[in-house]
Picture 1 (cartoon, rainbow, N blue to C red):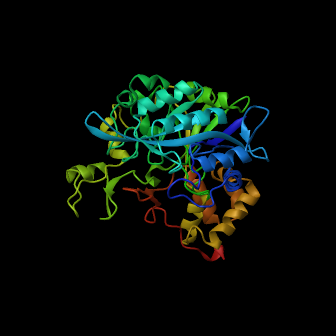
Picture 2 (tube, helix red, strand yellow; picture 1 turned 90 degrees about the vertical axis):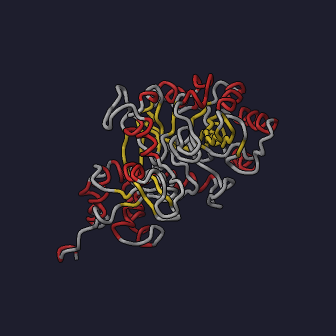
Picture 3 (cartoon, rainbow, N blue to C red; picture 1 turned 120 degrees about the horizontal axis):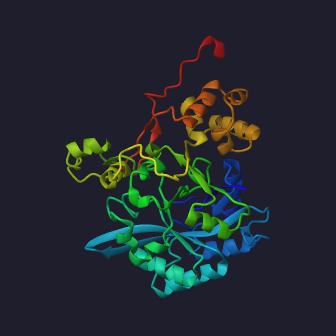
Length: 411
């Protein structure tokens, strides 16, 4: 059974999220996207947990599912902010849990540690990452902890602003319980392959969505091939790589922290440019936010292009709405974009199927030939993306990917 999973998401109880993030909308747009398994997100939050307990039931395989049978895994993200080795550390971790009983126990333990778990869907705690892992594993060995978006500057394992250089420095004796790493939007597996210390870990990708729109949900996902979809088989695949078949990625330049820079100063630098400026913004004279590409270059012990034995394949894509919006030169939320989007989904079942599998000639029967061609170009890696930096998303480059002028034959 092929599974396309997005296990790092949020509910409307997290900061800066859509107020319409609920189970029905998540299921609706997951199906449109082509996602077949979702994390619940935010299980630590009392109000969201009540909704989950009301709307989800265990199926014959022990998986939680809604009334229509769409499956979920209980998941939540914890923000640990603490001081270690003379520096303030900010690390986000995703927890996967097998059942509501275990989730209730996790909530109880966090509350006893003084965590205000209902202040936000992604609660902030002062518990060091290695202690958090130990607490969660003591509750239930079936729990799984995945370091989230491991390269993001501000809140991650390797982040330039508060992270560590080695996994063991962060998780200490609990490193033995870390099996998978979420690479985040601003890096892809090929970038992570440059670090030999990551070879033994499963590299996974999820959306970290804050809204249910199709350019957010499932923009990154992890692929599994399992005999039966149940919690233990997913965890086994994460821990052993057996049954984990690959990932869906966005172009890492699309991520908000690929390059270095300063958002307020409109400064966007490659690592080489940052080095020339001694990592100082030429406009405000303050330190630059050092992005993912630079940080990977700093820690890498292999040359670009190295591929470890046993590495899993990945598909580098862009959200379909972004592609349509670019070609039509109009906003992503406009009726023009939705009309084309809905025609493609109506004919070819899901966005992921359109992006990964649908033939050019078949798409040309449904939409503008320029849109069909760009979908194939994205699929084949034949586009350029102007890199994101310091919290600004990247964009399909207008310089290198400008749609051709229409000829008379197009009318």
